[in-house]
Image (cartoon, rainbow, N blue to C red; front, side, top):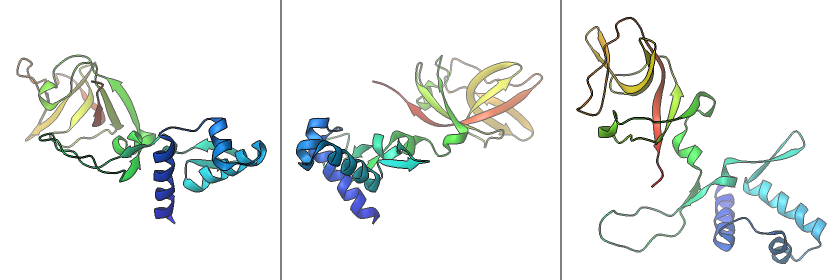
Length: 186
């Protein structure tokens, strides 16, 4: 059942590359307007693009998904593959949507790990971190995004830019989340 839905979704995307207009829907189904809309909505429910929640329609993550065309080497040119699957950026970047949020980065203290000024970071709420994870922390009453480090009993926050020192808490260090992804416009 899942494979046929994916195939239908691929065919739909290949044909339209966007959501069809009302007149395109009518032409596609060659039906009266009331009947056409009813059938299209039901087809989108069957494809998993819409879901019925308490008598109302709502878009699913698939509704906003983009096609994954395959792999491309960052070297010599090669032909692009056909559509392999569809994926929303939410599915790719966010493992726990109810425990996640975005923050906009200010500063360059994490540039050596690929996080730059104006990037968006996906933060998953957590109060503990593993050694080497990038964390959102409150250190001595100041918010920061740094690399969590623990050496023996000593805990500190490390920058990923040689021009910044490591930060050792004088009073308090609280972890509020861990970076799970980075979003950047080029």
